[in-house]
Amino acid sequence: MTAETYDAIVIGAGFAGLYAVHRLASAGRSVLGLEAAEEVGGTWYWNRYPGARCDVESVDYSYSFDDGLQNTWTWTERFAAQPEILAYLEHVADRFDLRRHYSFCTEVVGARFESSSSTWLVRTADGGQRRGRFLLCATGCLSAVNRPDIAGADDFDGEVYYTANWPHDEPDFRGKRVGVIGTGSSGIQVVPIIAERAESLVVFQRSPNYSVPMPNRPWTEEDVRRIRAEYPERRRKAAYAPAGTPHTSNATPLAETAPRERWDALTERWTQGGVLFSKTFPDQLTDLAANDVAREFAEAKIRDVVDDPRVAEDLIPTDHPIGTKRICTDTGYYETFNRPDTTLVNLRREPLTAITADAVHTSAASYGCDVLVFATGFDAMTGALARIDPVGPAGDRLADLWADGPLTFLGLMVPRLPNLFSLGGPGSPSVLANMVLHAEVQVDWVLDLIEFVAARGIVEVEPRRDAAGEWTDHVAAVADNTLFPRAQSSWYLGANIDGKKRVFMPYVGGFGVYREHCDRTAERGYPGMVFTTR
Ligand code: N01
Image (cartoon, rainbow, N blue to C red; front, side, top):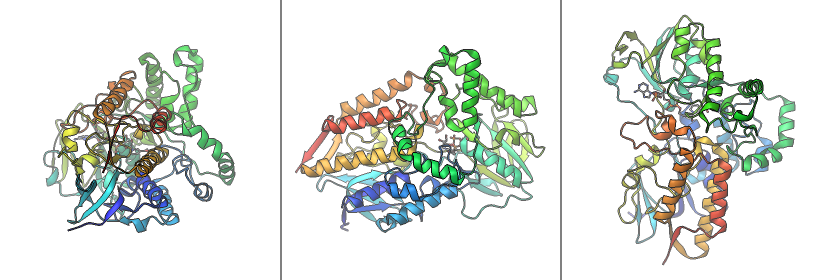
């Protein structure tokens, strides 16, 4: 079967995929988008559990590329909830007429590069094949659902839900005994809402996480006017900022700040909410003594809120400096454990042994459940691409190329896989930055490279092994200079997936610094690349 050859195939219709399709189509390139879901949205299509909300302010967690879009879309809340973010992405798809480029309900299951035509042949679950010169994998950092292999889980007779693949019809928890497994960002967001709706709730916690209250509120008309007026400045500040938002750390390290002022600064950030707390002081994620001060501040907050001291201690992490695992953002999480109908089970004290038809069993007790909610996360950063497992022209599989951990150039390209781009992939700031501006930066860079090679009759482009090695070493070295690798159970390291190589995956050097690396590479004519012409 001969498939039509597109200039580019884009996998995914989330923030990165939609923008990639828009840029390619606007540049006059033929582009095909492939999306497993029936609609646009990516992460925000699948993760529709109650309480799902973004911890980056709505006005920053939105595209910056089009003033018309920016100035006509009105966010209703400081931190947008999943339905509003999904509605925004649907609006973007409408406004730029992007759906016509997509084939929905089309899951990519494989891709192979053919040297004879210098194209990617992409296989889909429906048995189809599509061909494209460039393959842009906007497959998401947090999209490959982790379904832990727990003994007896298949025997459970009740309802089973995954936060990462939540049904469109909202489950009815009334009168039911619900068990939630997992206490990462998703578990922490869904728990307070299920507690309100269910007859009773048991939260099965293997690792506690730090969580900062989300000080959400509706934007007023005055806020909207102010934000519109300030938008250019806001975006200018975000463009090369450490996290791709206008916010930065305080200038003075904690070590040089007087004790009274430290507490004031931490209080101020705590009140601002969200992930900003980790960035109060510039040394908070590099100096353990500084981190300890912030950690003790957060732990005191947990002890203040939770009535039962034993439960409070169980909710306090003991295995990582604060901020070295993704800090969570919640609405009433700790307060939920003061409810008489909510129980915390510390799986470190009483390990989960099995699931049976109507209960979850630990080494100490059995907990009857009518419903189980798995908030057990993702095979993050590499999982979605690994499940496609692209194969290069010499037969190299991604699985083998990354057997010792992801090897990338700028977190975007992989040696021996020409013309393939991994958007938001390992080796880029991705999950540590504002993913929307991150997507714009990477897609713009890819588009520039595509134009560069097209203008020179180049048909294949891939990074040299040594150039990718240098970038990957840099990613590791930067992480090693921080406290991040101390969080040994983190998904940043792949530690949540059995058998996954433990390598610190995101680039912690900062969004702005990363962007400078990308800029410089383009300005210098892409040193480190191998170009092939016909
Ligand atoms: O996933 P997670 P998530 N038995 O991996 C537990 C983003 N996000 O979906 O830590 C028992 O963090 C696991 O325990 P442990 C954000 O970047 C953002 O919550 O492996 N428990 C952990 O507690 C976030 O970091 C937002 O010991 C098991 C939990 O399941 C990322 O997505 C909202 C288990 C998984 O936590 C992922 O968050 C939501 C087992 N066999 C998500 N297996 C916001 O913007 C796993 N667990 C606010």
